[in-house]
Image 1: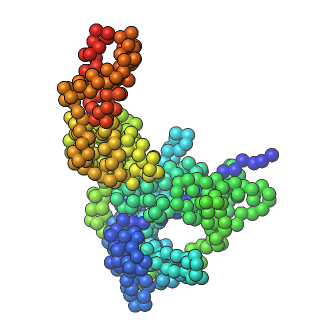
Image 2: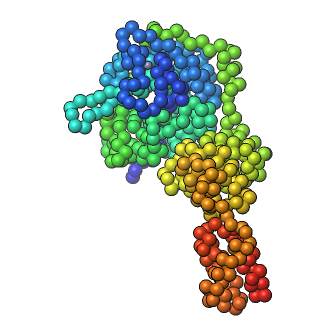
Image 3: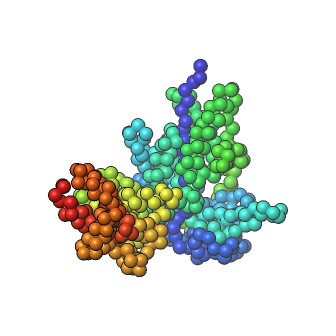
Amino acid sequence: MSKEYEVVIGLEVHVELATKTKIFCGCSTEFGGAPNTHTCPVCTGMPGSLPVLNKQVVEYAASVGIATNCKINQNCKFDRKNYFYPDNPQNYQISQLYQPICINGGVEIETEKGGKKTVGIHEIHMEEDAGKLIHDEWGESSLVDFNRSGVPLIEIVSEPDMRSADEVIAYLEKLRMIIQYLGASDCKLNEGSMRADVNLSVREKGASEFGTRTETKNLNSFKAITHAIENETARQIDIIESGGKVVQETRRWDDTKEYSYPMRSKEDAQDYRYFPEPDLVPIVISDEWLEDIKSRQPEFRDAKMARYAEEFDIPEYDIDIITGHKKLADIFEQTVALGANPKKVSNWLMVETMFLLKERGQSPEDVSFSPENLAKLIKLADSKTINNNVAKEVFAKIFDEDIDPEKYVADNGLGAVSDEGELKAVVEKVIAANPKSVEDIKAGKVKAMGFLVGQTMKEMKGKADPGTVNAILKEHFKEYM
Ligand SMILES: [Zn+2]
């Protein structure tokens, strides 16, 4: 008879901040770039170089803390975390252990049963990222690229409050949305600007003590996180059921094999010989500075949803989807501000944009077209300069290449033909060529008219205004209608 188990999960989420320069030097944080071109003596750990703190890092970290209901430590400081690894040129990482910038927060998530629960945030601290090792597949060497060394990170450490993979995903989505709304990071899991390590243990249902936990790293998608949680839960239950003991360790997830393997035994803080960073002065966040950061917090999702419901006549469902992604909300508001009808803007986002995102395997954060071009397209469709089919075709071009629809329609001769004389001639030609349909219509099968509309559209290479074609046909067959 097998027992019932409960899974207990806490997360460590690393987020790369969207600053232009690194945390302790003026080097660019831009992704890509030839190896070791965004480097200087500070971020390559040269002896005698001194770090200087980037003020924007403090502001982003504090703004995330405020938005996640944390207490802001107005007196905080940095510590050295000592360890050797080839991508860590100083042999220590500047991080925060004793006085992190934010503590004791939490965010509310919706659970799968439709309820709400709060996931506690133990702390948020600031730290520097390490470089990147590149293992030479052909030679016997490993190379190191220090472009990422010194890119600012915040680490958001949750309490062990989550009890399922669904709750973990809900928590991560909530964090991502808050941080994207703040503009503090783009939070792209696939590019590593948001990374989650999962601390997981299992215990018998009803037990008050936690089991021994493992930490799983290298999770770069929501799918990988879900699978790793399911996999690790089953592994730990198996060990316990067969009378074994779970070992506290760090495991690495292999996404292609859908399997994790041990990386190293899990260290505790004392293993790192933390001590106060002597090269940086403590950070003092004055009341004025804190108030200033608070006053610059953006309108978050809940407030935005309420405002949309008030201001725009669009369905609640649309509001939910659009405000679920900062990027979509921005495009929506900017396009409406250009004079476009809110319902129409919403339709283009909800139907065609979603369709193309799915088809291209992209997420809403990847949307890159400009509100100006969407507004122009809506205008072209409203004035019947182009018909609906052409509008869809042009939108796909806007979606992929952000083309100017006015110019594109003119250059490609896509303007709808609504000149009655011209259309009438084509309709008559189609009628003459399709005696069977004409018979059907005369026999009362009005449906056959749709076929003639289709044939006319085909003849006109899709550029006719279907409304006008319909009207011409109806007029022609009016005695049989
Ligand atoms: Zn540098």
